[in-house]
Every structure is written in C-alpha cells, then in structure tokens.
Length: 322
Ligand code: NDP
Image 1 (cartoon, rainbow, N blue to C red):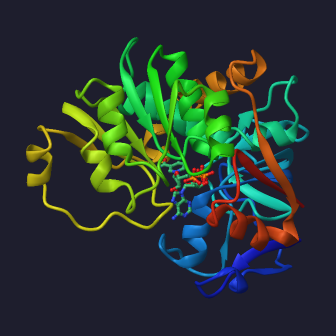
Image 2: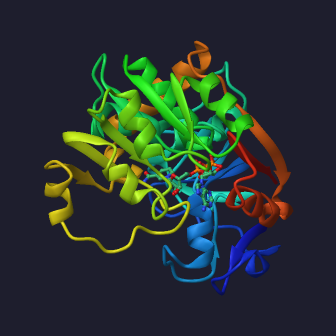
C-alpha cells in the first residue's frame, strides 16, 4: 500500500510517498481502508522531530474509512462499518491498523470527508471549552488563530457554552472567517497589540481564559491578557515551542493557572471519547458548526498541504485523499 512517511526528520523534502507493507492487525485492532485523511499541525511536528517517534514514521493522526478486517476478539466494530479516528498515527496511508477503542462510528448523515475534517479539531475544542476550562455563560475567552482549523471549532464551542469570544487572526479575510465561526470580536494581531486590545474589550479586566495554539509568538501577551486567577491554556506551537519560563511570572500576572493539555489525556476512556465525538458530530448535523474545508489534496501531495498549513495560507481544514 502507498503511504507517506519519514525515515529522517526535517523539511517536506524528507517526506516519502512509497509502498509499505500492509499493516499487521494486532490484538484489539481493526484494519481500516482509508477514504479521507485530516491534516493537522501535529503531522508537521512528527515530520520535523519536535515530537519524536522511531522511524519509519508514517504521519497522520486522523482519518475516516471502512473497516476491512478485525482481530479475532474484537466486538466493537465489524467489516463494512464506516468509522473515523483521531489520536492514532499512521493515517497518511491507504490502510491503517487502529486500536478499535479509538474508532468512532460515522453517523449516516456524514460523509467520510466531513468526519475526517472534524474529529481531531472538534474534540480538541470540546475538551478545551468543556473540561480544561469549562466556560460558563457570560465568561470571556481569547482564541488565537480563530480562522484556523482548531480555532474555528473553539470559537463555535465557546459560543455553545454561552461565552463571549474574542478571536485573533492575521488577515482581513481570516477576520471574516473567524467572525463567521462565532467570534464576537476579532483582533488583527499582525497589526494591533492584542494584549492592549483585549484589555480594552474587557474594560481593563482581562479574559477568563486564553486558548493559545500559537505558542512562542503569543505567549507573553497572552499571559498579559488574563484576569487575576484566570487560566492560560497553552495547547500548541504553531509559531514554535514556548521558551522556558519562571513560574513566578504567573504570580506577577495575577496568580494565574497554567496548563499544557493534549487531546489523548482528555479522551482517556472509550466513554469520554464517545461523549466528545458524539457532541462534535451532532453539532455538525444540527448545523451548529459549519465545516470549512479549505482544500483537498492527493495523498501524494501531503508535502504541499503541510507547506500551505505552516505558511499561514489556510483557513479551516485541509484533507488528503488516497
Ligand atoms: P491551524 O489551521 O490553526 O493553522 C495554524 C494557524 O496558526 C495559522 O493559520 C495561523 O493563523 C496561526 N499562526 C500564527 N503564527 C504562526 C506561525 N508562525 N506559523 C504558522 N502558523 C501560525 O492548525 P491546526 O488547527 O492544525 O493546529 C493549530 C495548533 O493547535 C497547532 O499548534 C496544534 O499542534 C495545536 N493542537 C493541539 C492539540 C492538543 O490537544 N494539544 C490538538 C489539536 C491542535 P493566522 O494566520 O490567523 O495567524
């Protein structure tokens, strides 16, 4: 089968689109024929080695497809089932062997592309707004890169919680996309000081929580945008990893809480995973979240998709098809 993988970490030139043996179906696993693959920033981290894994590293954490075969004791899914998953690497391929507890049934209303475009980023928005900092009605959050794949989902999920949403975006076009996703206010953070603007928009108080996926470039000013005893949720590194810092800074900024969460720890059991996935698919079906698929690439063009994502050219979701 064809797959996209790296044997050496580095730029997109290190990506190989070549034949690999069909994956072995281990205990508790199913073999899935992949129909659509979600592109996520984490795929870039695995390519560059920021997130280390032993080579060959088949990229991709998210896809949708049809179960072809299951290990003997498996009961959760059967051949022919339409399923999607997030959080298991190996999705940039024609087939993948996936632990069945991670497989989510795709509702009949949704096609493969919608499912592959939603699960990882939608569940991330779900855990950030419902569990990490469970937003309450009337609270205010700051969401960076609000026109991005995950950012659009967070803006929508925060509105579902009844919060006021301040987003940031780099261009006027992205500002419009962020507003359509649910942001009440959008700050062009490439032109304006978002800390100053956030303080202004909150009457000097600061927001209850910042959901920060940008990392190094926004870190300092994000801390400065939070109310006393509010929360800094640093959940990504799109501009680079946050540098080392002194915990004392949290006291100086107002006894802040800091967390650096990941999706896997918030989908720790099958029940928790299905709770989040079911909500995400329901939001889609009920039209509470409007999917924006920026572009669908061929699997062989995964390098171009990653280049576009990393160069801030995209809004919403990117997909690959085998
Ligand atoms: P996005 O679609 O959000 O793309 C990244 C966006 O970040 C860009 O469009 C851009 O928006 C903004 N950005 C700001 N500075 C830079 C920069 N220097 N280089 C590139 N982009 C920049 O990607 P994803 O939704 O896939 O992921 C966003 C982040 O969220 C990633 O860091 C990812 O790792 C993280 N994430 C974390 C999860 C977790 O559980 N911890 C789960 C899912 C995602 P603009 O042009 O408006 O500035």
